[in-house]
Structures are given as C-alpha cells and as structure tokens.
Length: 299
Ligand code: SF4
Ligand code: SF4
Image (cartoon, rainbow, N blue to C red; front, top):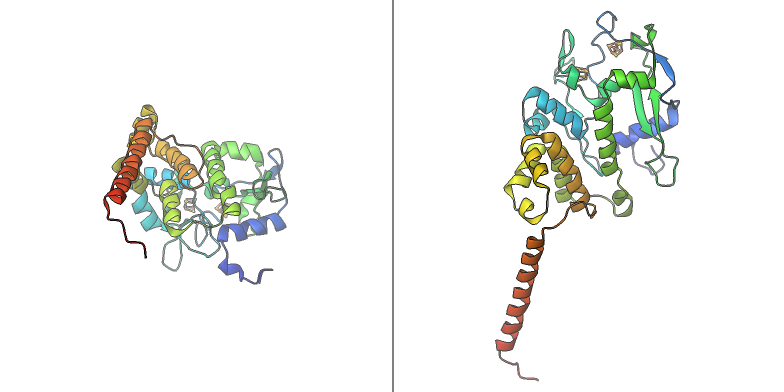
C-alpha cells in the first residue's frame, strides 16, 4: 500500500515504474561503461520477448504502422492495450502480447524480432533505461540519467563486448526515437497537469488522436474547417498530406494550442474577421429584437 492509501495497482503504470527506478537503480551517464551482447548464439535468445510490458510512444506507433503498412487505428485496435487508471493524465499504450499461454510478442519470429529496424524504444534501449530525476523544483523535468537493467535470466550481460552508454545509443540508432521521446515528454509532463489537473474524456480523446491515432487526426485536420480557420504554412500542409511524421509534428503543436492554451497556432485574419462579423450581427439582431418587442407594463 502506498502512503496515500491506494494500492499500487490503482496507479498509472508508467509512474509506478518511474518511482521504482528512482528509488532502486544506480544513475549512469553517457560515458559510463557496461558489458552486453545479444545475438542468436546466446542460449536465452528470444526468451525475453514474451509476457512483457512494452510502453509505446507516439513515434513507436508511427514507425510500426509504417512498417506493417496498416493505419494507426488498425494498429491500435489489433496490437495494443489501452489500460485506464484513475491516476492517468495522458494515454498509456502497451504492446499487446499474444493471447495464448506463451504470451509472445506478435512480432517475434524464430530468427528474432520481425520488425527489428522499427522496433519500439524500450526494445532498442534494453538493457539500458532512461529516466528523469525528480529532484528539481519543477518536478519531473529534472536531469536525465541512464540505468542498467540486469535481469538474471538475461545472459547477454555475460557477453564480452564493452560499451559506453553513448556507444550503445548510437549503435541502436536512438537519435530520432530520443528526439521524439523528449518532445512527447514535454506534452505528457506539461505543467498544465500540475496546475489544472486531469483532462476531461473529450480532451483526452483529442490528445490521444493527435499523438497516437494519426488516421483519426488526419480526418480531423483535412476533413474539418481547421485549415481554413488557422494559418498553417502551405508547404507544411503539403508535407502533412503525404507524411505521418509531419502530421505528428502538427499534432504536438495542436495539443499545445488546443489543450494547454499555448500560442502555437495563429488564427487566419479572414477567419478572425468572419468571427467578429458574425458576433457583430448577433449583437445587432439581439438589439433590434429587443427594441421591437412590446414594453411590459410596470407592476
Ligand atoms: S518488438 Fe521485437 S524486440 Fe520488441 S518484444 Fe517484440 S519481438 Fe521483441
Ligand atoms: S534475454 Fe538478454 S541476451 Fe537473451 S535475448 Fe533477451 S536481451 Fe538478448
């Protein structure tokens, strides 16, 4: 039982994991060293890709949908779990393991990961983890640090190759994942949640669509009057038409504007004028209705 009397299961699983990491793991920097090797020659090969919680970021989902050639909506329905906990402020998306006894990852093959070049962030990083210190005044946005996961069942730690953390990150091609992860953290740990609190369900859905379900977000961007009302650079609109990565960039800007009230979008002058004219017309018609209506007798 935690201090606030809630059972651990009732909390946001990401936050529970972060609490554990901050309490239990040694903090490492980019130049710290560790030994590790994972290849078909280790006797544990493929055993760690079953019955495991893999949290997916928006960029993980984007890469996997492109890899599989399916839409985000299909991917989210078929391959993910979306647990809901009362302490959650932002969506949690977990890769769904197969529902048989072995509970293997749906992408596991005899030869290893079947989506290797597009595997999710946690699969790339393993056995290195990344966390953010809580020890600063503004809470979760403290110093980043790495830590090493050393599970006894993983024989990769007995392999001879030595890495610095930075060498490992480079080898695993973490750059784009890292950049998108940091950008998403800016949203999910936004001070809005500390100041104002949770999102109501309709806004949570907007957050989810603009970050994870790009097919639905695409429908909203191109199937509504949004692009008539907001001044979005034409080249960027063209990019969004053909690129989900550009659309995801726009989704992050939209969340900042629509949910957090930041000035990341500019209303078009014509739209602003049209709104003003419509307001003026309403005021005028209200005035004329009240001047036409019969005076009531004073009692
Ligand atoms: S995505 Fe690949 S590396 Fe990650 S758990 Fe599945 S099979 Fe393993
Ligand atoms: S348990 Fe460790 S060494 Fe074995 S396959 Fe998984 S990551 Fe590689």
